[in-house]
Length: 473
Image (cartoon, rainbow, N blue to C red; front, side, top):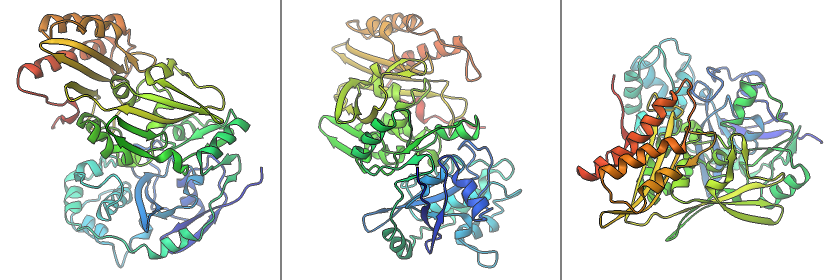
């Protein structure tokens, strides 16, 4: 296929054109092609934040900025966007206030991670996505420092006042751009209809939304992705619709964009999203992508299964709807035909009387993979459990409902004996593996204890969410 260069606005003033093979990383393009060496490669998997840049998109009359990890972002995903690196902010003789606050407060020692922290804190100062109303600790959860300690960095953040950007130059550049539709082994559709047609023509193409998982296939496994279809600019897939019946999300909605709506649907969902990775990953990763890749330890599917979510899948002009729980067939296999894609997800609104609890257990609070994630939706009326949906991730080859546990609860008094019976039934539902995140015995014991916790909460004055606990020290 004929390749066309990508175009993006750098620093808000410069129109950059560059060749971009499908799996060249944005980090490599910035460092090696443009000499932006302040942006570092630390982990090459989106965990440490040393590679943080700000990416901007036209939204209404302005630009919506978001911090992202350039190490797992592919270069074609910069096309039609605005880009800021640490060099965009200040110079050695005229530091930006964020940089000055870091220097004055001794917020840097070796300095390797500092540019990433500066970009994250700068994003906070301009109200970038994922930072609105967020505590500083949450904003920098995706940035790791191994030598300075976080106290001076937190102080630098508090010393930096909000300072909205003047984006007039970048807006003019972006409005004048014609986004590329295809390049070397990649396509970039703008509508769901275009995407559907491309997948009929290229049914084996790799769909990439945020690249927060697929990016690692390239940086860590050195895999050849073949033909890639980037769907981040498909506006149809980024819709959010709320009504009395619940919440409908396009499959391309990013976590940071869905966070507020999910929290309105139920606070436990909002807390779950806050625990998923760091801001940079939530600003790229999509809920549809988390579902479509079928990971057994994806955080969202157990919660959505417990709430009775449904999927709409599309192939060409044909659509079908299924319960989310039926999408996952076995490890590495989902009910998705060649040329078919996840188009949207519907999450029913929990009834006021439904008791919803979601618990993610991991070795550290921030930016960590689940050892297990459990979700419970229980209806208790006049002392009886009239309805129960229980689902776990990290306990089997797929996210999976706990049918025996549900059966042990349903129709029984909400009492300690019934809870113990249901907790024991979890061993019929799951035969988890042992790995670095936890042993099989730990997983079964922890899953049972989450159910016991809910029982004790209802007896002793209300919930204390597992999602909101931090261990000090």
